[in-house]
Length: 359
Image (tube, rainbow, N blue to C red; front, side, top):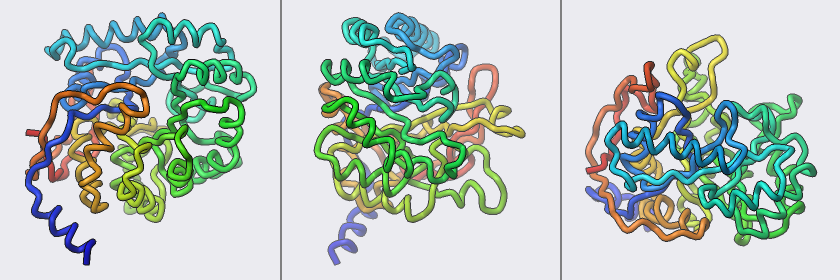
């Protein structure tokens, strides 16, 4: 009865006002596309953790500062007011990253987190970590400085089925990572399995997790049933309905260590619709509206603001944003394509209806 009453209340809710959200996992890419990707991100987010898997990857504080300058130039070019969107830079962890480089990044101030890609796990991850022992000194230094490690939590062993790579990581590699640097703050990004979300829920304080709109809203049938839909192909790959239901249940838990991370990762249409399409879903055009749909499906709209606007700042040790946004229950149709530099990108839910809108 209580569940029925909650769902009835949510169906009657016409508007939601919440603190302006942040995105704790975002790919802006680089070059001429920045004008478009920054515009999409800044429409709703005040801050975003910017991923470093460029070509070449952002492996030093100097490279992070240079990338931040290019983002600022894109903001000026597309008319985004200075200071209205703050990119929080990250550094790409490699086998050769030293404690001194970690200290230099922390001292410079631009780098808010370090990203661990297992080598070969996803787009532009060939320079990633091959052996945790090689980065232990860097991780211990991060723990001492209170710097966050963002982790793409999948194994890359070709003998492991692609649908099981996150589960195997949680079972075998996460304990190893935790043992290397006790006290290290870790964000397990883009949780996609029951096992991964349960690992975050079970931890006391040092492990947080981000959830994407696509993993919350669709399962692998949406990508594979009735034909291959390449614009839903991402890594971690979409999982089973049981996994998706576990993610929705986690939203209902109100866990303060779960927060928004879109993993918005655009590729031009030709790089998706090809014989070997790239991994990544572009969702920044409607991210906060899509999260509202997911929380409504979960019967958890009372936790939407904490997930989008409060939990992430608390984990990263920054203040929540002072501004507010309002979502209205108002259906609208997503464009079939959107500008992406000289090309176009196909957004998540292209040509479909989204039921909430920022006003």
